[in-house]
Length: 432
Image: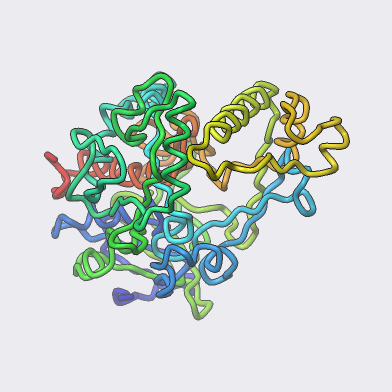
């Protein structure tokens, strides 16, 4: 990736000047934000990423597992499961996090779920003005290019057809997937677009899974926004293999202002980069893995919810179409013995609860640690520090009901709107 000429400054570091915006992290939101802001040729943008360009296999959907076990592409964090995780090794929950351009959109399993419209309306009720479903819908539509399909219902009126992120249905479709949709219909869940108007159905809808893919290849935010597109712009500098060490702050008290960052490059040298406008934040000590406490089932209500979900899944399994039925539920022998479970019988709530305590996990959807209203305002500006914003999954007031990668990309798009409006940046996305 290209780097601008560096200028020497005091303190043994080198200072790079001339940027209007410095973006720390080229992941799901960061790559989208950098691409959108740099659409204005009069704006100079720097994007700093600790990882590198994705390896070639990243575009292969089947390569997810190998990417999540590679220190070059995955931070490989783990977390404390709280009351859950009783069946996990050492009671640690794996937390894969993307370490490359595209971030976790490059190592996830590509499930594309916007979330329920009510999720975003609730964000607004919690104080996130400007983040209602009506506010974020244009961002979702702008980022999507939903492929034509005869295999699933698509609500074209609320879906995008010309965005950078490809969204498609796996082809060829696995027969068991079709059977699932039929079984759900028999169990009272009609077919519909779970990323469209179907989410307004109180009973929910069933569908083949939608993934961020285009022509059978992963459509991460690197491929969607940067590759052979924004990365070629002279006003966007992408610095890879550079881990940010700290924010450069000036002033004190209520007058604190972020003026740049220090980062360590691939040679081990410490460099500084200055910004004249904004900086979309890094950990205070990047060399130490974060402490991640999931607090699973700290609220007893969560167990009641998951038991209801498990029973709904069993109902769908019982309604499986055709002659080839699903087999009996495979319950671990230890739990079956504890609860006196006999194969073929209806499982008790106590058994389902214990099963959840042993094996339930949230598939890595970390979010809400820098909530709007707690750490940042609705325009994503950090309280108490000027020229500093956060734009990633951490700003969510509450986690959406679904996989969070699509909302994370939406946050990058929405951040571009907010920053562009405040600073007069002219972007293609404006007016769409």
